[in-house]
Amino acid sequence: MRELILVKYAPEIFLKGLNRGKFERKLRDNIAKKLDGIKAEFIHDSGRYFIKTDEIEESINRISKVFGILEVCLVREVDIDFNSIQEVALEKVRQSEGNTFKIITNRANKKFELNSMEVSRKVGAYVLTNLDGEINVDVKNPDILINIEIRNNYAYVWANTDITKGAAGLPYGMNGSTMLMLSGGIDSPVAGYMMAKRGVEVSCVYYHSHPYTSERAKDKVKDLAKILAQYTEKINLYIVPFTDIQMEIINKCREDELTIIMRRFMMRIACRLADKYGINSVSTGESIGQVASQTMDGLIVSDNCADRPAFRPLIAMDKTDIMEIARKIGTYETSILPYEDCCTIFVPKHPKTNPKLDAIMKEEEKLNVDELVQKSIENIEVVTF
Ligand code: ATP
Ligand code: MG
Image (tube, rainbow, N blue to C red; front, top):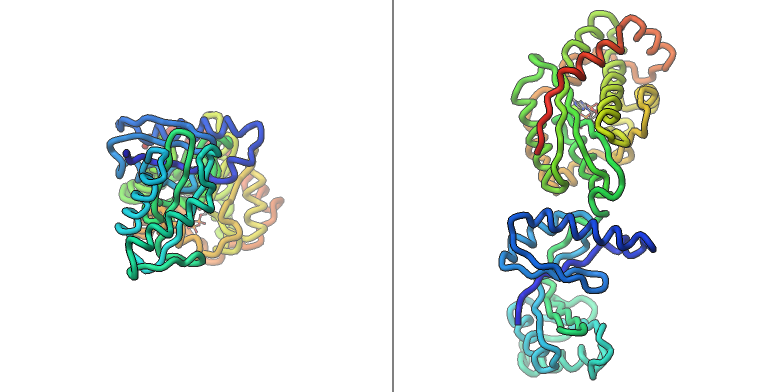
């Protein structure tokens, strides 16, 4: 009898038809990459992976962060023999806490002499006899749920407490790539997580306004990229010097249009970088109506500078829901550290909430847009996590 890790994929992968194999292989590669440095053997068995390793706890912890996985279960491998199966099931019930239990059986091996219902019933009766008076069956809402799977070579037994929830979503790298505008705030790391969860490869760009934004503000963004990288693969963070652009806007443009013009520069630069590094799209942490620059008109005017899809995965989410995800993925505590962002240092007293494209473009004629963009791109710093 051995302990193995059973990896169940997210159900969506089963719906991929002819592409399913591609998704499965990508998932396998992504798991293997996450297990870098750990000796592990993979067994692919119709719609799931079994993984043999000596470093079970660390492996489960890492695998549960891989997108495309529904559950990671620590399972006991048992010979195909009814007595052995019921002994292990009994032991699992004994090790679990609770007053009620249920047995669920899945018999993939149709040669096994009992069908699923019979296995569940007989094992249940065996548990009841051995734990007489200590425990009852509850088929609707049991405290302890014992899973038995009878496959061709072995059977597998595990309890609900042996299950770690997976990160869900789709395998990372299956759905193109995006350049995420990563600020130090709460929203953009969540936006990056959500894109990555749908299989989109993430790179990040941060606009740094030295000396108005500090080294600590920059380090905070690096820390956020590092946390995101736990869920993805290597992440490149492009740090763009933004002070000259902001100064030009402040010196030459209308005060109430500063923010929207600045956001258009962010969009242009993100697209230029995406183009340079072969990235399909850009993403931001914007949410409709959240602040003055995130009005419908504001979004339309900044979108006009994009030469590729600009995704905003948080667009229809409330701040409280975004914060909940930030806590869950571990970015919240870093995001709330009180360092300044380039968007917050030069805020107009009355920012335009309904900017019009014509008027903004007219205002931008006062600037040498191409040269400003070009210069900031030439002075980029790249950090990889
Ligand atoms: P966040 O919490 O992500 O900072 P926010 O609610 O503070 O968002 P804004 O400051 O208006 O909103 O920024 C909106 C979006 O613009 C951010 O989610 C991010 O994608 C991008 N952004 C803002 N500032 C920067 C920056 N300094 N570098 C890179 N991207 C930025
Ligand atoms: Mg911000």
